[in-house]
Image (cartoon, rainbow, N blue to C red; front, top):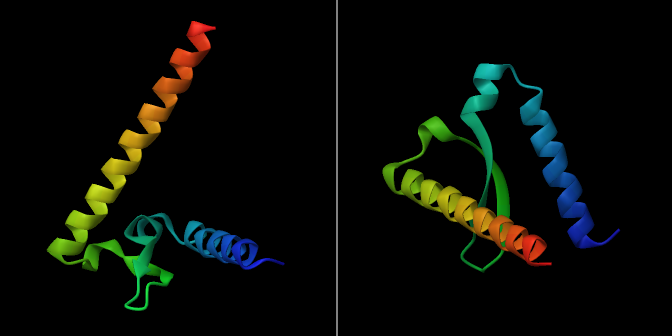
Length: 84
């Protein structure tokens, strides 16, 4: 199995474990990517209620950026479809 496939499986297992938590606990936990000093990306489970102000700001910026990109791609595909 490739390293990418293994990482995808690990991520799915972590997400499944969070999904099995009681509702209150699953709302407080998430999986975030962290860039290490050597440039590697590490995924880890975090309690979002314990994030610092800077970490909260980075998380919100990331979420909003992703939502904007998803909306933009959706609208571009919709325009392409209606132009046909």
